[in-house]
Image (cartoon, rainbow, N blue to C red; front, side):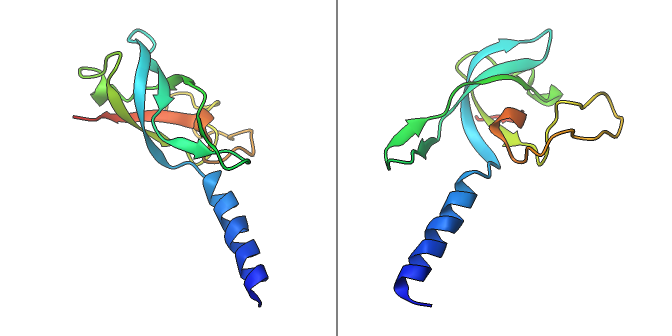
Length: 116
């Protein structure tokens, strides 16, 4: 493998990894205590195709885990985790088909905790 091949594979691997979301800090834009959901702004920036950094679009209606409720408020920094598969069909404690090929998506954010 020559240097060009190595650089191609490095860029390819970086491209794949940049699309896999695991955990990130975010700011709470709004919180609906009755529905236990929050609108969030991810604090990490991402690199655009042109090399510039860009902000993520807001995450809307992310579920908030029960233990976060006493501390969460607008402006709080929270830690969000992105589910391995789509959580659209999650109801109570029943097993379910994710019904989507979506994996590690920002659309499947869950507020795991409040930072400090």
